[in-house]
Amino acid sequence: MSAALFVTGTDTGVGKTLVACGLVRALRRSGQRVGVMKPVASGSFHSAAGLRNDDALALIEAAGLSGDASYAEINPYCFEPPVSPHIAAEVARIDVKLDTIVTKYLALSKGKDWVVVEGAGGWLAPLNERETMADLARALSLPALLVVGLKLGCLNHAQLSRRAIAADGVPFAGWVASAIDPQMSHVAENLASLERLVGEPPLAVVPHLPAGASRLELAALAGALTQRSDKLLKRLE
Image (cartoon, rainbow, N blue to C red; front, side):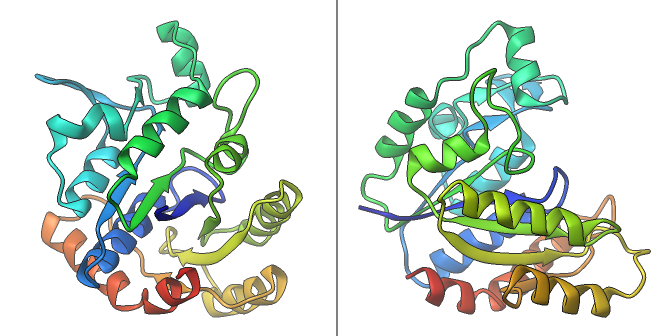
């Protein structure tokens, strides 16, 4: 069986994709065969090959995979409206099914040493009318890595997410701090409080990425995260 990880966040837009891609690159550089998955995504765009999602494409690129050949397996549920996936699915009249995701996950994990799965939104973001991202992590039997967006309110959001992960019986792989608000004051104090409240230090602190960053800046930041990921990889082995 492949080792695997479910990347979740305290909210949407907190840097889950950046962290997931950095981890994928770190694993590949250590010689691991890595698979990736973005089971459900909204806010996608039309292409000649069909709907495509930027987060899923970023994961595919980080993993060194062919996008068109493997896209449907990596991102089985792709929706255009930039709304909660369960609402986008309702608009498209598609029922997001856990069994379908699990089947595709098992198929893409064959021959891989690691699989990195990125959720959508936060821990309790709905998949459909019945299930949430938490149910998906449990169905896949994956430990959760929590990305904490550093902004006003993060102390509350991080604690709620951490407690929910524990209450759902999902192993906690640790947390990563993501500096999404460049104007946030007292960052060091907030990080110290998060370490105390979550119960352990962050596995990495990702600096702020400016809006409209170039591909070179994205690559440099992902590389910086890769350099700091050894601690996470050792913990998950």
